[in-house]
Image (cartoon, rainbow, N blue to C red; front, side, top):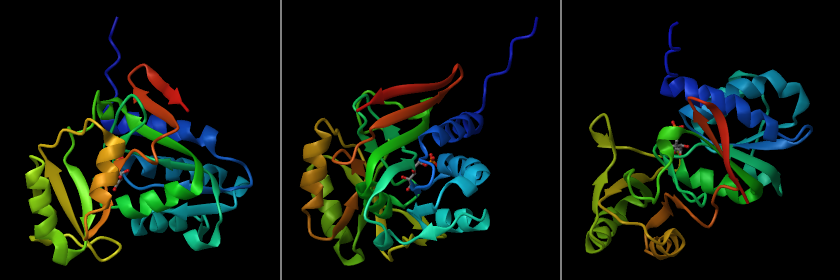
Length: 230
Ligand SMILES: O=C[C@H](O)[C@H](O)[C@H](O)COP(=O)(O)O
């Protein structure tokens, strides 16, 4: 008897991306996040595009993918609210608090998530953590404030590095830069998010605690597991 080979991380992402379709409300506009897991969701969503009005997207990359598949994309200013926002995460704790921004889309992700009544987070099991802080924390900053903000993180015991692309500071969809901060211990995600949000020059901190996930769908080798619903 042969043992089935374990699923790859990408296969787990595909599994959970497809499972998220059950949260899409027919006839509605769906909030769509960014990243490799969400890309699987977008591809699956194309199969039911005739049943939805369209999407509000959190990045140029997701917008391009949605449009290429024939899914209409609305500007966030055109909608008052969304029933559901579906997005991945770089890590998620047992309370639904997340670190996001590994794909530099954190600011628009927070904006679209804020419009939604329900945040469905789709991850493979490698993203589950007992407490936030394993993944380098992305922080979108106004370029002229980068060094000042890096010093503030150093005072908290962290090390901030400018994210580079092709040897130059990465420029986000919003024309800003990203600092990736290691060495932090985020014991109070709500308080930490509020604190960093107040620093001049911070556009968005990648802790999602005020807008945490209401549903967690986790792709595991045993199938998709719903971790919590608030
Ligand atoms: O900025 C990017 C987002 O926060 C992503 O949702 C996050 O990085 C997870 O991406 P992936 O599904 O590719 O691991």
